[in-house]
Length: 117
Length: 115
Image (tube, rainbow over all chains, first blue to last red):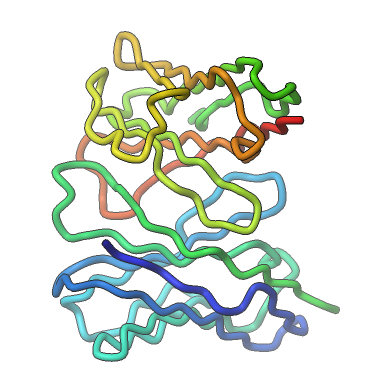
């Protein structure tokens, strides 16, 4: 079974600064997907960024980028130019390449990000 | 486009009572998921439906939890009898039949407190 570990329960960042959230995972599979999801207070969880394990290039979505280290099984999220709206719980998640249909995800425990003025 | 709707948003019950949560997915989405999010933990998949058939219910405590998705649209998750450890947020999510990996649309969740 796969496991996802987020060792930072809380992080803080100053507005306009850069912050990196850490995630490690354990799997015996060679191909899979990794994701970061954002869950604002009392709002729906949304997908922030996706990484395919077979791609060496790190994914980027505007101010969000990842540092994917497959050998180390590490998948960190970097948020540049942090904004107040980035304050949320961030979850790292894993999905096997073949799931027989659908998106069965294994989530980490989350990192609460606070953005300060 | 309307999002995933869930109700009730909040529910407080005594242990051994029963509770039901309702989910209306995005129109046309074939796949529906129920996740359990206990405080301090990440969401855990309880059950996944493809249309009105169950794809995965391996982590559903079947002695007390049940779920159905009649007509392949709305879904209901029931807990009977509830235990203290069932206190959690129950998230419903849906995705298109041919969704991109990770393409899940979540509702706001139903928060259950069991006293």
